Length: 436
Image (cartoon, rainbow, N blue to C red; front, top):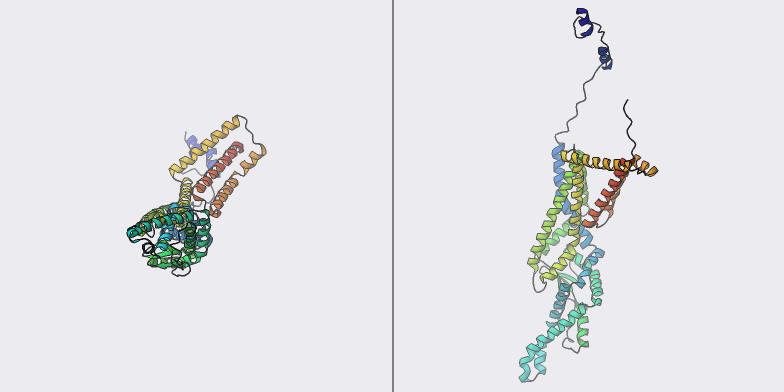
């Protein structure tokens, strides 16, 4: 019995050469000089707070960079400015406000009631005031017909193209030309349009305004109205100097946050979602600012509906860009979270993988064979997926104004493409060799 125990118990102190085959195999499998497993290095304590600071800086810079880009691209660029304000010529509120401005400008230069008093008999002079108002209403209708004609659209576009240099000067605090700033108002000289109205009235037999001289500044239309225009000009000049620096600082903050982060996928998600939140706040501020502006400028010189049309035409690029960036940030943030290690993300990916595997099995059972094309896609499916992501990103970057619909359609097409590549890869991917 003792001999049996000595032959089988390799832990006995007196045993110097075990004879168990199992023990020999274990000893042969053990390394001669085992080393301890490497301990993962902890990131520096400064990296996490620095990444948070850079994310906050990027979030604050994003709305400013967007606003400066919109100002430089839409307000201070002649071609884009004219493109933005050209549709206003067909806006009913602008047409009515322009007709009122021209009619009042002409009527204030001549005493029509006094002229009627001089030609009417004494017993009919009581009708001078009503007749003057009637003629003014008739002149307004004639003016409205002039600004409602197709020719007015060309005159409006040409006038804005010629006057944009002075609009730019007014926004930057300089004056001159056909646009001037007085008492917080940016006014457009409508002298050439007044000449057309006088000619139209002469053709209809109304010569009461023939003696009115349409000198520069005699007939104006208010484009903007704000008592804080001088302060706004200062901000425009300040940010106009930063039109190149702000985007560079924004990109540097994004890149720095990702570079110092220990968990870069999570940082990308945080940056994207923070960008979306910043754009949401920008849209809220836009709505509040629009309402405050319209409440402040409503006046006979600039009716609320006309002011709203001008504001929306000039600021539509800012609102559209904010909406687009909001959707892009939301899509990128959600995508980064889906690819992360969270339990719900892991389960979602496993469910999608199982679904594609089931579809591939059913298609294979039905004898679906894609031939060499399927085999090539299966061998390069990862590369094809990366190429699809790069192309989608390039489309969003180089597409000038994709808008919300453009972003969503780009994402939908990308998801369909990725699904097709994954399905074909699962269908024709060769099975892994069995382990011996």
